[in-house]
Image (cartoon, rainbow, N blue to C red):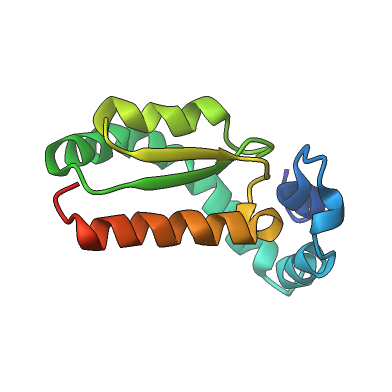
Length: 136
């Protein structure tokens, strides 16, 4: 597991997922990450972080209660080719945040790498609407 976590193939897959738009990616993205992950001691740090993800699930009820209670204005931009998270997870936010603005993008985990202009427009529109209509 430790070796696969920082392998070149796993690093590249985190960026590309199953995206049909691989030409939109700059290979430096995963090459730089791969170089970073292979620094001395990094495999231990990443393994500890990965192992610690198991505690996230136990925290979900607390996070969900906070979201339901506070109803923060929420914009979700989700890549449909993400190898780590399913599209259904993006829509799950609606259980606690019925007014969340959710967009499923033609992108992977790093949606900004593939759809920077679309992400920027969605964020700009979201922020502008909230600035002119603070209660929405």
